[in-house]
Length: 236
Image: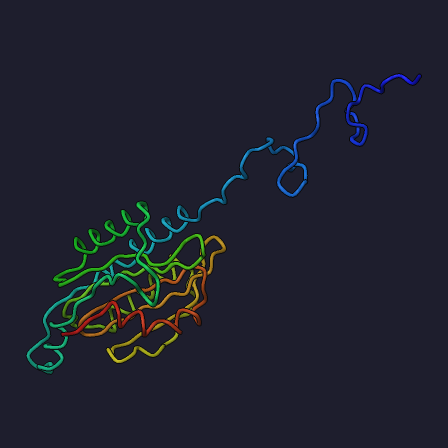
């Protein structure tokens, strides 16, 4: 008579004494080397910290060029003065289809941008600092703008562009269509720590502002610039 084999389940291989079966991950594959069994995969590292550093650099440069917002001289057109005085910048709930960011870190930074501008820009009638989109999806836009009656919009634009070339490595900013609100606008490609930036800045008699589209090119930023500016700058 044959002796029992000791394996009550003859169709399953018997593990050698002292060895335990290797736990399997979903799909039947063993876990990666060095990965604890049944442990969740580590989350992807957030880019929020890097973006915060970039935004702080922009604020330090911009403060919208230390814009001096002053009344025109008597020879200026009355219509220009009225339009400028009736211009305001706002932070809409959505910008070109992107919702305003509610991340506490970026919300705090937005408040800091507004505070900085209020303390630096002279005679402003409104200020905006806000983020829109989703960092995780690499679709993020930053807005910094101020309204008031500008005596020399071109100078404010030139000052802002000069600062952006230094801090955001924007090599060249070319003239772009400003849209129905008029004034002047320029866009260029920036970069920091390998991250591409589409950077656009505008200035008119009633406002000066900056839009940075993270992870995108200047060409992509230009395609949305007029729409975004029209939602930020309002004229009554």
